[in-house]
Amino acid sequence: MVDMVKSPSTNRDSYFLISANLVVALLGVVSQYLILINLESIEYGYWILLLDATLSVGILVDFGIPDAMIRLWDGTRADVSRVVKRGLSAQTLLGSVILVLSIPVISILDVEGVSWRYILFMVFGSILLYQLGSMRIGLRMLGRADEEALALVVDRILFISSIFIAVNVGPNIPNLAIAFATSSILSFSYTYWRYHHNSPESHKLVEYLNRKSFDGVLPLIFAASPFAVSLFLFPLFGRVDKFIIAWSEGVVQVAYFNIPWLVILSGLAVPRSIRQAALPDMGSKRSDTSWKGKVVEKSWPFSTFLIWIGVPSSLLIAELVFSYIFPDRLVQPSGEKFAGIRLMVCLLPAWVWSMVGALDLEVLKLEKSSIKYSTIIGSSLLINLVMGIYLIPRMGILGAAISSMIGFVSLFLISYWSGPLVRQNPLLFIKKCGTGVFYSVLLFLIALDWNSPIINQSIYRAIVFITVSTLPIVMLEFSAIRMRLFGVRT
Image 1 (tube, rainbow, N blue to C red):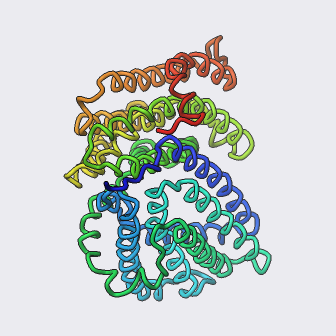
Image 2 (cartoon, rainbow, N blue to C red; image 1 turned 90 degrees about the vertical axis):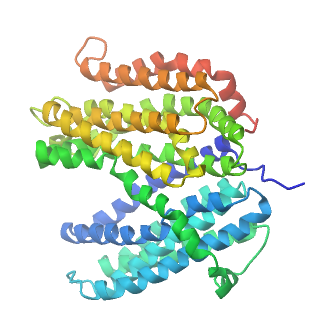
Image 3 (cartoon, rainbow, N blue to C red; image 1 turned 45 degrees about the horizontal axis):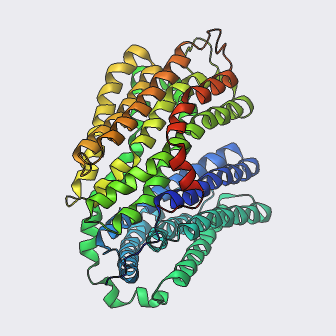
């Protein structure tokens, strides 16, 4: 009898990954603060541009390969090593090609006070960071999302420690570049050590990357290409609205929209963590549609609980951030009715729908057609674009919030109706639609009646009103939530 991997668990692994991503987000603020207070404004601007540029190059190494690895995996514990070996070899091949091609381009760059060699260090560090994806998905397939979550936090701690040393040695971009590359090497070493420790078949790194390891790598890269397309498409949700705002309303309105969108962007780590946790769980029995349906069904109570906690928490965090960090001219601009916390309330339905449809989208990665996943994301993005072009010139940045929500609603609906679970559990579909609609109507009503006696422009009143109004949704799933949180494995 084949020893199937039983250890991946969507709800348990979601808890680990969500917790880690929230800690990483907090530590990210600390690292930005360390850099910001030690660099001049112009230097800080150069550093951010260099970091974004090199990370954009590094993301090419991901190329959707971790997603393709799940399709390659047969669901057994013994097969994890083969799949990780193939994925790591594919990413090493891509990384080597990208690094070589980057050298002539980087060598002609003229960044004041920064040698091209330091930029090359940053590209190398970025490549290593994205190569971690193969080993992290390996840990997840082995049911060790706790190890993956710890590796995420360790990665950020190593980065902060390196930055701290760099700014004390000399606060400049060359030292920060060395610190970035050094922390990437240490993070790669730590993740490899933890994967090697948990792997059923121990291999040295040189054994992973020997000549035979590259057999079958090109087919894996070709198989990953549809996921690579989606990797670039998904971040465009929200960005397309900014482009339309700039074209229709002006650059200043982009700044008004971007401030609350930053909070939403951080919150999108939650549905992303749920998808990451569920993929190995569903992939362990990839051909069993009923099993995938059970994973989606059993994750829903936990998702309703996270939505119930997440909406008021996001508003509270936004209120604190908007009050103490961002200037009033961006969060309370004169003449702009929907901005700051009020616009944040209007953007939250988009996050709710991203939670509602997280696994309905993820299950498409396991379909026979590998292009369906990226096609559906592209279709929803097109709907977002069309609605933005229609609504933003008529309603301003409020129209952008509505078009963002419509984009995520369409992503859920198209994913569900195109997926394999469409006939399995119609009641669950009704629950999801009901939850999404209820939160959307409630949040938009609060935003529109912001000056009413009930809310009276108080975010704390709004939080209490939302929490109490949505409590029945959580109570309907209370028994299942209690079982998931207190030791019953899914």
